[in-house]
Amino acid sequence: MLKKTLKAGVLYYTLFVALVMLLTVGLFILIFYQENFLTANIKRSERINSYFSSALTLALSNPASGSFTRSILLFEEDKESSVTIAQSEWGMYSVLTLSLAEFPKIASKSYLIGITPNDTIRQTGLYLRNNFSYLSVSGSTILTGRTYLPYSGIASSSIEGVGYTGDSLVYGKKFFSCDSLPTAFSSRLSQIIDWVKELKEEDISLSEPVAAPFSKKPRAIGVPHLLSRCSLSGNIVIRSDGKLTLSRNAQLKNVIVYAPTVYVESGFRGICQIFATDTVIIQKGATLRYPSGIAIFSKNGGYLQVDSTSRIYGYAIVRGNNNTKVGLRIRSSASIFGYAYCSTKVDHQGAIFGSLYAYGFEFRTGWGLYTSSLLNAKVLGNELSPSYVFPYVTPGRKAVIAKLP
Image (cartoon, rainbow, N blue to C red):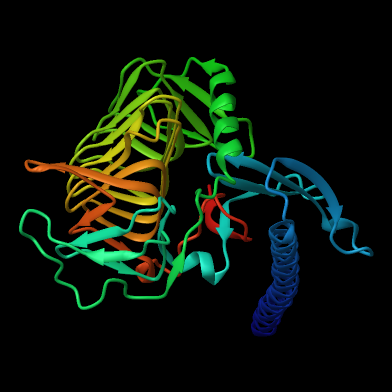
């Protein structure tokens, strides 16, 4: 009886050891295959990332500024490296969308791109058209960077008893300006407005957040007068036939807004490009975050007004035909960070951290009308952020502004 018990115990012990060994071997085999699987996935991920990186570098080297779609093989002996590069205009910027043909389950990648010009353009502060009249500066006016002035030059003066307080008239190099402003982007601006007008509107509910990917066609939304309490982002065009007000409660990101007249309500904070054919007013305390922009293409007396304490990070463009009227009004303590252009007269009392291209200057006080004069205005060409990427307003190299969702 004792011998039988020992034999049964040995059998159980043997089975237990065998089971442990089997599990151990199985675990090692599982770890081996899992490690191989993870290594293969990592290598696959690295290969896919290299495809996207190479495609982006190739796309940025292409100088074409319009819309196009092309498919290429990045590496001759690698059939999986087939990539489709699509570029489309998005306001005064462009969108690059990259997709891999051999990896249909891999989501495409989109980037907002602009232009990095040469240092001569990047360091330009004020460019005042040669109007055969000298520029008069008073008060705490500061001009830095490369400053382009009429042949008559610049002089200090006193306006309403306020003299010039600076140590130098220009803090930077001075150059002579041309009789006209550069207008290389005017055709693009008119094309954008024509394109926005032709888009077919969709019936989209604004009660829920709406996000449109840039890998698909743009979605157009018609708004009667007020855009409030909504969340819109991505490949969306907001359009109105009359005066449109952007409420402080509207959450906008990377969208385009179009209307003849646009009011941006005090307290608004968002990222959008606004296009108008008449007037845009940025009320006190509103902020358009980078990369935003405002462009007015007016045949009459349209203008852009940037009220006190408001901020624009991006660009501000006024393209008008009536040179006798003021097209850009920048109030005291208002700021533009980036590129500003006005083909009509400018009433500048705030600060521009970047470039201002102006046809001429004009402002009124209780004492009268002052032309070709600046009072307590700042154009700080040396203060433009090195990470700022220009819109398509000048020649240069393409550069990524942001990755789009």
